[in-house]
Image 1 (cartoon, helix red, strand yellow):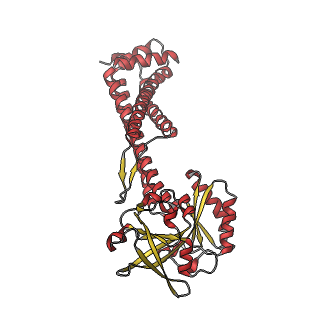
Image 2 (cartoon, rainbow, N blue to C red; image 1 turned 90 degrees about the vertical axis):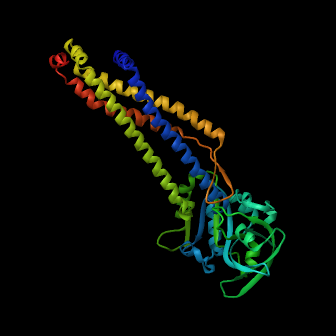
Length: 414
């Protein structure tokens, strides 16, 4: 086998220009795929982290039916104390859970004593909420970014409302809401901060303290609308989500009447994330096409140009299997050389982009997302295996053709 490899290398070096062109084309395909996968993967991670770390959390638990009617924020589908205790028990038994935050969400009228508009309110315990959504303080463009900014009697007002109604930090506002019994109640609050939307300028969500929310809605017991959960390892979202469903949802709609949703089930961006994965798959298919056409073209030309050579080595007793392996090795060597060059150049480009820190904005947000492109070892190995396998596959037909040539006919070829 060593002699076959030496002869194959010599034959490739005889046609240096063609070999270099083929290797360069394969390397370009590998570089393009690796850089594309690294950049799109980094973009997806940055946006998913922004969504989950700013307001959503990794996993959420609700009473059954709440998510289906979440646009109206129904107050009659709150989690009861017994259900909340069951949730806390389940979370306590999962070591992968880093934290949980109880939330009350409701629609309210928001007034500056001069103007009135609608507002969605999220009532939270600030320390727990900041632990579950660590990027929430970064969204506060003005005012107090510490948990003290969400102390009792204070409110974080969305930037859109603040700009439209001329609200400033330190102003006094009134929040009025109707509870599930139909009675109306209001509370005067102090604006402690202006909050940027996590997905652009269209957000109308304000934050207040959990106890203020209970007071406005006149909740007598320990009720809540949802429990947002943060995990220690984001890669375990689906596994832990499935484990919590098994423990909390039960079977047949009975037991605790709870629902567990991962971030991908709650955010429309999950469809964009799947589209990014499909685009990465399409790029890999393009790489396969590039390698297949390149190797096939080179090996067919090699067979046509070396007909007399093939006839000579066949005439001196070289077995057809030996001729077959010779051309297969040449094709594989081209693939290996192209994959190696592509990985080296691709790694260098990804490293430069990682140091350069490309920044983008998403959804009209003022917040910059710094992309840190990197590629998993699995993706590198997969690209190399694909290139080498396709190189071998593309060499089969020309190699079989060469091995089946009749020596006499080949020697007569001009």
